[in-house]
Amino acid sequence: MTGAGVSAESGLLTFRDSGGLWEGYDVMQVASIEGWYANKELLLDFYNMRRKQAFEAKPNPAHFALKNLEKEYHVNIITQNVDDLHEKAGSTHVLHLHGKLREAKSEKDDSYIIDLKDKPIQMGDVCPKGGQLRPNVVWFGEMVPNIEPAAELVSKADILLIIGTSLVVYPAAGLVNAARRDIPIYLIDPNIPNVAIGNPRFHCLEKKAGKGTPELVSKLLETNA
Image (cartoon, rainbow, N blue to C red):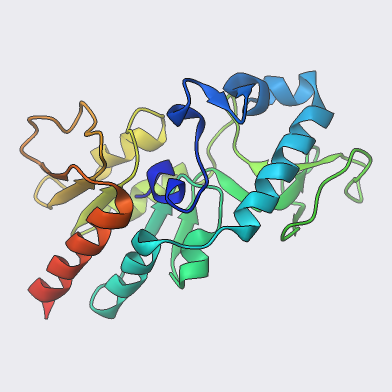
């Protein structure tokens, strides 16, 4: 399970790193379904900017380390991030909980999804049914369609890695509860979440993702060699 701390070291910062502001905007203004209906043009401009940033971003050592883990393990990545840095690094099984920034979908038809790469969405860009196109991301106030497939993956895991996430955004934070009680859980973050402090189930590395992930992956590969 990966969160914003993995993308941050590729230059993609999150609102939680800046006191609830995201590129100078209040998070509920630009990351909620209410914000969309209040000012669609603002959100399109905001996500057009984010899409371009993400398209130009490069994977960092954390992304490449998780790809290397596939040498000895079957690795499923469940990410809260909307960028495609895991895919750029070569990871082959990536489940996006909160959607994909490089995609657009219709506000009237969730099944209509197109790949934009780094192209912008403009007001007046519509699907065949006439619905305005919007970013294919999950905003506050919306359901998380992939939460059940993610819980199933966690329930089948033999090892759980949690990297770069505060474990406070639900429902994603609740996925850890789907893990079997007998498996090891490794957590990598410079700020250890309260849920992990003093919890014997967690093996914590108080480091940034770019440093802690390669270290842990090296140990796991040595153990399985």
